[in-house]
Length: 303
Image (tube, one colour):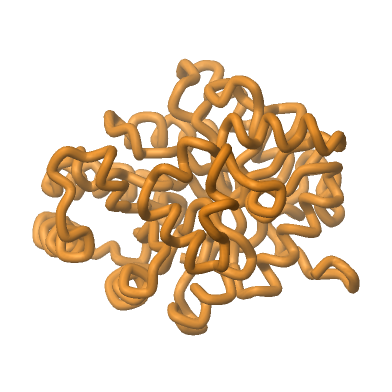
């Protein structure tokens, strides 16, 4: 699957009723976003909301970022995927992830568990579909597994530096679609305060914390909800142009697609104001265009 440009990641895509989801999805497609990503970490049905988003739109890719493999039966995942993929060929991506030890009672040997999950869904699937699944990969071994067994990787809570490292491990052909947190707030104190409120619990999850340590952040950076340096590295806050510049950094580092996770006071509500303002700032993006689906290039001075 080819996926380029800019998408949106939001818990709202799991929370909205069918009518409102259809309305929001249709608007976001008109704004030109290339993909809509819904989380799967909390378990439950991810295929129903994904199918409703697909039905409400005509062009965008709908992606799960990512389904928690400990909370789902592989045979059921394979069967549900086959149904959605058959109805909407080429428009559905399924991300798979191993979550974190503190969040899963039976967490053990995550790399082996992912291999076994992939083996099971491949055995159960009625259609061949490695081209439309990704792994929520951060470390080297999971990224290598993503390269070997899937279309690529969807790293979460990362920086452009991680994107460059991931591209080196994935090689030139795998799909790389990092998540980037954004916040349209120009006051540094307010921006960092809101960001810390949404980030702090993530730093207690080992896979994220270890990945940030590999990127050069120390214990002081991870404490107290995150240092200014860490918050600024993980969240593109400011005006829409700053968000576009951060997207360009990821693209220059090797990303094919960047999915934006807009932070707000209510993570379950659509961040429509932010999404609209960012779409206006993307190169030539206007309602009805597909500019947000096109590559965003780095301008001089943005890196």
